[in-house]
Length: 218
Image (cartoon, rainbow, N blue to C red; front, side):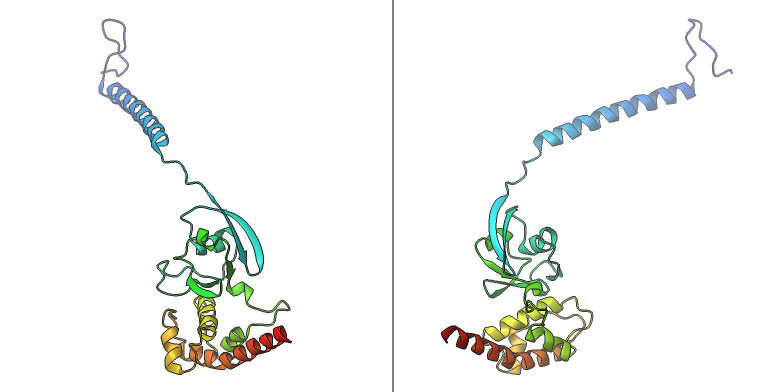
C-alpha cells in the first residue's frame, strides 16, 4: 500500500507512520507545556533568599566589612569570599581539626562556627602568624625542623592548634600535649614529629611573650 495514498475525502490516509509521528509530536508539546508550567510554579513557590547580614571582622590584622548569609560557616567565608585557603575543609563536622583558626585568641573549628558569629571579633588564620618580614612563627619553624608533616593537608590546623595549646598552658608535659592536641588528626601519622615540634617551640614562644610583656611595661 502506498503510504501517501489519500482517503476518499481527499485527506491523507492515516497509516501507522503518520499516526506515530503525530502522537509523538503531541506528547512532546504536552510535556513541554507541563515542564514550563512546573518551572513557573517552582519559581513562584521558591522561598526568598535569606537576607545578608552586615559583619565587621578583623582578619589577620586587616579590617573587613562583609555581608554574609546567616548560614555561611566561617571556614567558607575565609576560603570562598576572602581567598584565605590555609584553613582546610576536612570532615566539615568539627572532628578532624584541619579548619582550626583563632577567634579572639581562642582556637575554634571554623567549619562549625558561623561567619556572623565573628562580628566584632579578631580572626587569625595560618596566613597571619608569620612576621611581617616573612620570618616564620616559632611553631611553624619547629614543624619544619622536626619534619612534623607529610602530605601537609592537616598542617595549618595542627600549627594553629599547637600555638593555642602552648598559650593555654597545656604544653608542660608530653601527656598533656597529646591530650590537648587530640582534636587534630593527622592521617599520615606524623604525631611524633608534631609532639617534638611543640616541645621545641613552647619555650621559645614563652620567651617571646615575656619579652613583649617586658617592652610593654618598660
